[in-house]
Figure: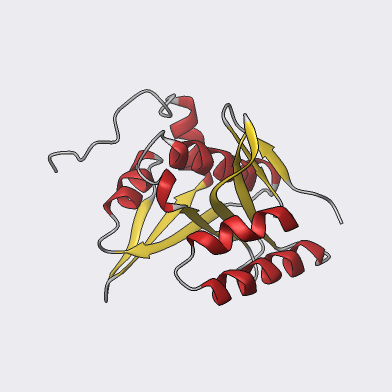
Amino acid sequence: MTDFELTTSRLVLRDFTLEDEAAFVAYRADPAEGRELVERFAAWRREEPRLNFQVAICRRDAASTLVGCCGLRREGFASDIAEFGLELAPAWQGRYRYAIEVTEAMLGHGFETLDLQEIVSNTTEANERVHRLARWYDATLASWGESKVLWRFSRASWRDAMRAGRPGKRSLRRSAD
């Protein structure tokens, strides 16, 4: 079993530890579901080959501070496709640009390390922050309806966004479109 760890300028994305469980469960609406999810993440970590990476997001300057979790899940998809998910604890939502940092790290891992061609992400129609983040990385809107939205990130659009130097270069504020 190989431990997962990605480091950004301010964050560490790593496998969950026993110490993370209490903080994760504390910010979940349903504590029982939170404990069940931590167990599922641990089971995924032990799988060979590892198809699902659901990891803790922690601050680099305070490694025990859980900011949220994120993941790339390939189970149930073609071998070159994964689903991306990101969840920040309520205290960390909408501030500090952590979502940008995490998204960039995980998409980079998916496209460059796992050799994925496409990464999809589901959200609700009302989640405008995720819509802005998806557009930031040139994701395409694949479906919209019944209160659900599916975004598709392609390897080509990811590379174009990285070459254009988009992260940190422009505002994510709502556009006038």
